[in-house]
Length: 239
Image (cartoon, rainbow, N blue to C red):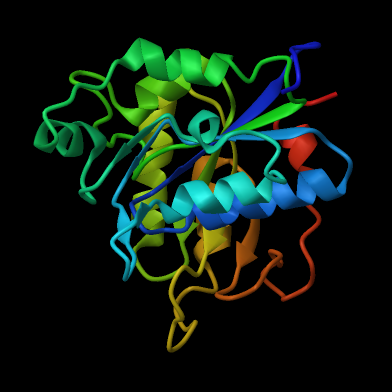
């Protein structure tokens, strides 16, 4: 296992809701950074919602995806130290298993990566105000780690409201939103009514909509369908 050698930049990936595609986006960013020659880590503090295979074995797909996206260089336990079976908010899932979530332990799990990689991608759980521990939310973890946020928003009707609420919640807590990515997590029958979403979101938040990730695509595009060039390292404030 590599030893700490320097500082680590970071990007905190949050979303407007659960099921918006944070893991897919985080893995996409990780692969892009690795392809660019960057040393990348991925950290999802808690994963709730296990998958049971035909032979009865249990796995967490998000953890497997993130571990593979950074090249399998680090143990899955470092990628995600806490895992629960029920697909519920972490603190609720923990109570079902008669467990408690130690917020400081989750912070320390992120600190472990410092100096071991150039860039750490931290994926939150659910939305920004999703309960995490007994008192803390995902926003509290983002505030403790002090990484800029990337907000993943659902491509579709209603996303303007959800995105503005997320940005407002971030700003009231002193969090920096570096960019917004619209993701088509599930195939839409029609894009009618969504064309103005990026323009309206940018106009009202003064935060760049970096691109649109269509369902099944591996790279984001601009509104006109052309490739979106995103400097993920710069977004994470990595030299």
